Image 1 (cartoon, helix red, strand yellow):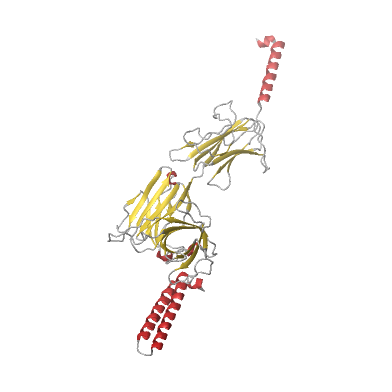
Image 2 (cartoon, helix red, strand yellow):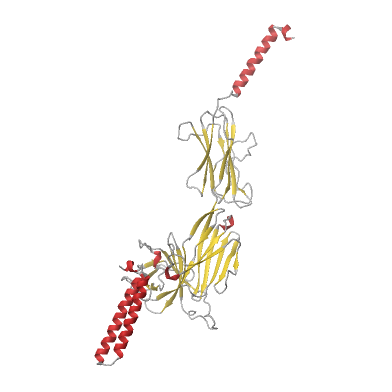
Amino acid sequence: MALWLGAWPELGEFWGGFGAFFGVLGRVLGSGRGPKRKRKRWRERGCCWRGCCRFWGGVAVFGEPPPALRCPLLDERGSPSPRGALLRFLGGPGAPPPPETPPDPQNTFDVTDPWGVLQDFWGPSREPPRCELSPTAPLLPPPAGSPQCHPGLGARWWLLALGTAEREGTALLRQGPGEPPGLNVSVFISTLTPSLRGLLGSPQTLHCSFGPAGGPFALRWLRHGRAGTRRLLAFDSAAPRATAAAPGTLLLLGGRGDTAGTPPPGGAMEVSLQLPPLSVSDDGSFVCSVTTPHGQVQQVLRMNVIAPPRVSLVPPRLSPGLPARLRCDAVGFFPLDVGMRWERRARGDPRPLPLAPGDTAGDTSGDTSGDTSGDTAGDTSGATSPPGDAAGPGWSSGHRRGTDGTFSRSAGLRVPAGTAGDTYSCLVTHAAWDTPHRVSVEVTGVPGPSVEDTAGVALVAFVIGGLCLRLWPAAGR
């Protein structure tokens, strides 16, 4: 029932208003004329009615609070505590109490979530999310228009990180007095795109939202890559536009929920970033950082840029009985992990066959050395002769890096004499594909004369010509 009512936030406002009405009614009747005992009874009834209505209002707004959660507890140096932390979630001010959970006398915390943003990490199945609790020293801005320090400057603060496969979030918690200590959610930030795989050359949107919304805030989007940290966008709610923005970036500002037209929990504000077509330099981490009067929080998003290789095989066909050199090229791939290998199959037989005794190829599978400084980086242990060297065996090149940051690689196979019906394939594996990519060439056509046959015919012709000159010398003159 609590979960059903939680789908109707309007009922929470109704019950809250009803409770306030009964509270006022009880105070009025309790302060009027009449016997003292009767006035006291009216005040007690008013308090009771107000408490009941607030209880149902909390159920309607926040639903059933999440179950207790055990999390790794880190100290100031980042080292994990051997006992961990037990978090008991209380929901909002009028929400029902959590289920009875035996407290840990040392590391138990009661977390108050006024906006109901944390319970979304459990989902319908109520499977607990990943979590981590660590102390922090937040940057707290002074109150607007006041030279005084932030009222929470002397308090103890914590960071609670939550994560599932679909979302990740970070909450800044302020510790209050009491036993066990209470933690109040001060500001919260989350993303629905914690880890992305983006195709090179396609636009991408990075989701980020924070709460509570409604007050002033400052936003920064940063990118951490191999070239360092770069600011992509800066926005201040007091200004009518972004104060700084990289070319092609677009700020998506407003409310967003899991479904169209549904605002985020707690009235969160969406501050997503739309990127221009991805380049290799976008591979890395992005940071969404928000500063509000309640504190500063940030969320890290990971971007993996993917570019599948374009694979080609030459020559396009082979003739039976004639030697040939095959060349397989994988061009324009990213990241660097690529594998190339050769395979031979007979006509009508799906099983791969061993390469013929004269077939030789460089071992090019699984080379992920990562050295991209030159054209010969990442050479395999096999022979690496260029394709123009007639005396060389099979070969494989190193990784070659293009001007756009993508990589290319080649491999070769020497076929001394093809058998009609055989198929030679180049198999390329890459992180962009779940299965190897195959390009093939078939040995087709009528077998031509071999070298031995040609030599035998020439020898017979030479012998016949010599006999003719011997028997008919006049004809030779």
